[in-house]
Image (cartoon, rainbow, N blue to C red; front, side, top):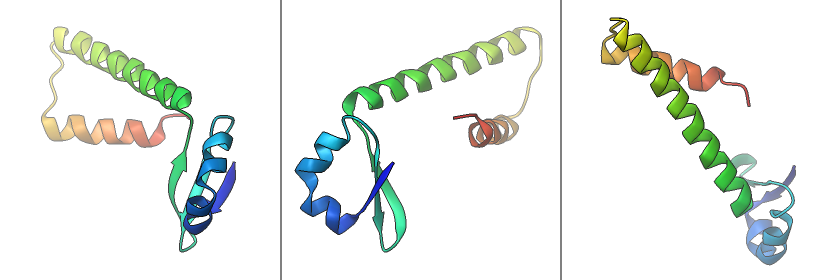
Length: 89
């Protein structure tokens, strides 16, 4: 993945738009990553994948609920955070 500084990204915006159609472009500010530009197609794929994962987790939750397994809200959100942090890319 190509990485640009924020200044370079601003100066080369048109070229960056073209490159982002083929691969993500990382943007750093003050040496730290702040953004990644991706194509609209890739963004749509990521959003669809997020929906699939969410639906799957909701279905698991509903199945568990029907079995009588109940958790308090704090536990649910803690487990969800851990799942998201450890989810394979």
